Length: 285
Ligand SMILES: [Zn+2]
Image (cartoon, rainbow, N blue to C red; front, top):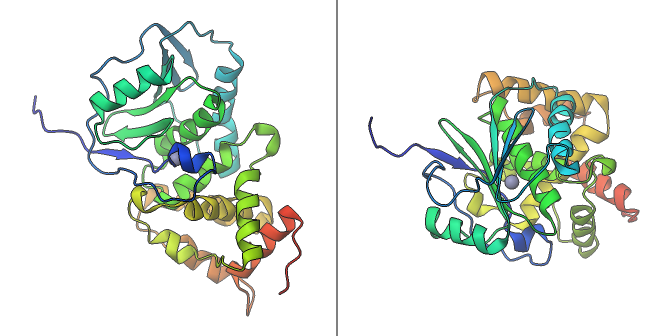
């Protein structure tokens, strides 16, 4: 068998500093060619299967663990919200018992990788999530597992939308996609008068390393605006995903949104108003 490395795609998951909302500094992120998982000291203490998920953990983990049930249920939520079929392609979750074990694994298998609490890797043959068991494991696994569910059926999902969708579904289920951290951050930018939403700019992002906190927050906001305001916008996102699934070169969302706007409409202004409404900020228009 040829030993040529398989091409891998690393979703642009925000590193810990960004995910925690503590820093706006644009930490570099890696994308491009990565070896598929398989080497290194992978967790193999327990293996639990739940729907599409195959969970490998360092520690005993019951199939009925609340988080396992939640992640399994997320598959239906993602499918229904986005009108996507479910897939049977396994998504492997590798759970390390602590950050030391995880950091050692990342350093040996993905050297030069920036610090982050969890990440998703897609290769030609596998969908894998790696994470350390820590305080924010639930949020991290909801985010990364969403990448797995989406990539299993829409491998060509654009980078910004991939992250916007993952940020939407990383929130607790009872929040229905409302990401309070991003909403508060964008409201602050609105009040400063420094935020101008720009979907063209997001669509131009080619590498996860280019994504800053602004991009993650705005990507979430467009997804929330599309899914949670009008049935027409929701259908627009669903139709786009169905099309990009069949044809990665289908017309982009920016074009579709512009086409659907009323005369003189401005989606960027609508998005600012959406943040203002969500956060009860009054906006002079
Ligand atoms: Zn991500």
